[in-house]
Image 1: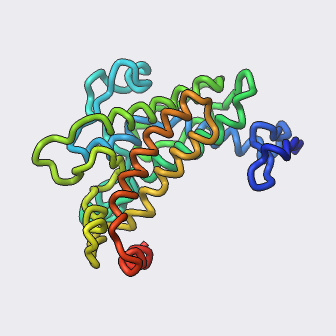
Image 2 (image 1 turned 135 degrees about the vertical axis):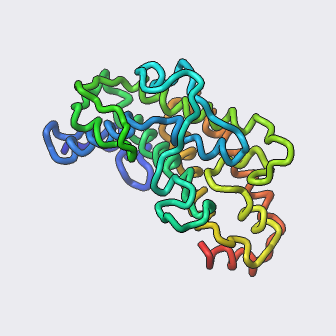
Amino acid sequence: MSVYTDKKNARMGYADTANVILETGSRLEMSERVGLGYIMGIDLPRLIAPSYEVHGLTLRYTAADEAVINGDKQDGDVVKRYGGWEAKGAWKSDAQEIYTLAGEQMGHWLCAAALFYNHIKNKGTVTLSAASLNGNDASDDAPKQKDDMTITPKELNDRIEYVIDKLDQLQNTEIPNGWTAAVNKEYIGGCDETPFLNCFAGQSDWCGKYWVPWYNIHKVYQGLLDVYDNCEPKLALKAYTVLKRLADWAADGISNLTDTQIQNVLEIE
């Protein structure tokens, strides 16, 4: 592995990943290609769908979505969220619907995609094998990649921008009247806003049957922050705008809590 470090600009003493070159054929380089193939194979609307559902909205595929372009979905089809931790009730068949970490994987994806972008942004193209592009969907009906794929930094940038634009759109869309799972459009988590509203109200049993809500939403914060830190200025500014709204939502919400109430939050999380 060959590493060049710009010490003046390196964070915490670590090399900027844009200046790290992995030896071709090394385990790290092969692992990177598998990881990049994974994030390129994710159906992004499915990652975003839970956040829209929390707002009482239905996300549908459009003609511009890859799944429609590839013929796997039709324009107007309802987007189905991923399973596992993203599912209502998570993986437990007997769990309540509110037992979920929905939205967390979207945050993880943004982190990974942003860091990958920073690493490959100075490269012309990156070739991914078909093997590294398969097996990345929890459902049995996932389309399989038959051929190798060559991607450019711009293609990865565009996928990140797609997610950020959808979250920005969500924050600018009014929540339907009478909807209770979310009341503040700035909130873009994948689980109900209810436990957070209970928390903001100072309730001791604020979490109820929900599963580590703050842990869940912090993944979204980190994903947005990584996009801000690692992507080009235009996209970074978009991510900052979404992040600022979400941060203000939390800061305003906890502003009146006492130290004891904050400690109660930390004990649950």
